[in-house]
Image (cartoon, rainbow, N blue to C red; front, side, top):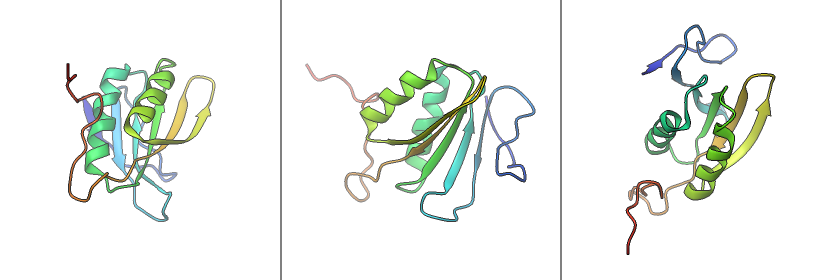
Length: 124
């Protein structure tokens, strides 16, 4: 279950309990973080849903920050970025966690939502 959590004084999300947390951040500059997703050790399938939701809800070219303790997220995130045209700006790794800054792409046509390649059905 994803819960909204207030940012701390450093702008980081509340990390007092396990599970997914996401918070909206205020916009200061063009590349400032618009939202933070603290995924803990959650599997990629749960993280993917949040990323897709943010991709459609946030303004175009927003920067999203993802925190994960699951090492299997890195290759899946890189592939998702490649498939969706999302830019992986930075990757930071500590002992047990990784942080990623992701710049969401602008829509291909104004007012036209573009489904993720993961949501498109195969055409025979």
